[in-house]
Length: 299
Image (cartoon, rainbow, N blue to C red; front, side, top):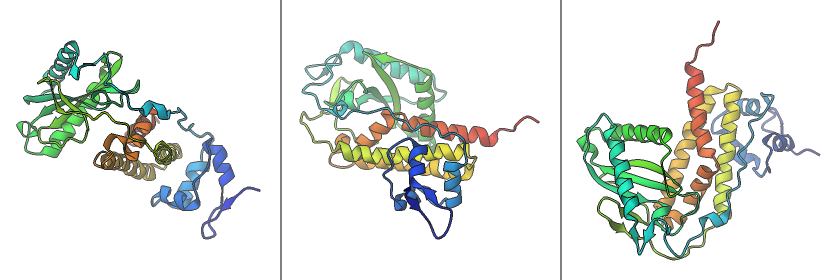
């Protein structure tokens, strides 16, 4: 017999039917379901599930636990005796200069830093070259929030338009303010050729099952947003897109600011979401939402 969930005599919804529609194992009790709605009324939620003929397939790419394993050494094609390969160092400096020269604003590069797993012992085939260009935001404008938003937009557009790879790893450019706090456990100054913060070589036990559960919760909610868009529930979709983007951002920051940093449940959950395409889907949904809202159909 199908399990039924009923809310104050309002429309019933079959958990078994939800399981079929979502195409994945159902393990969310009704209380979690209501939280996911985040202020949406029950009718909107039911419409988002039943009000369309097809459901956008949930992201099913598997992310293996062993891809987060610590290594005994830093990535050997990048490092030798804790020193960055000079050809890679030179190329990273050129990439940073190329990025800044193509911007309509002038800001002196204070430093160029390599962070992330390629500056640590937890590198894998999923790693990116996280290249951080350090500038003083005040050199651009006193409104630091505006400057940050400008640089974030510029680097996202640049990363989208350029597919540069170093030793098989994608290059991701970031711009950070000179007084920004270091959250990574490994930070290398490419410009000065020295470690700002050396990573530690030790294995930390990762609660991967807890991280996966946290990631699956967010992935489920992102898939619901896709349903809301298809059902043309734009107001509810926009509210949930903004909420989920803030949730993901705060989750990762909390993890990186904890004692476990890169190995925290929150940061591993973030990496799962990035690797399986959930974060990209959420960004695509936001673009799709505004494209639809501001479009006028032909007569």
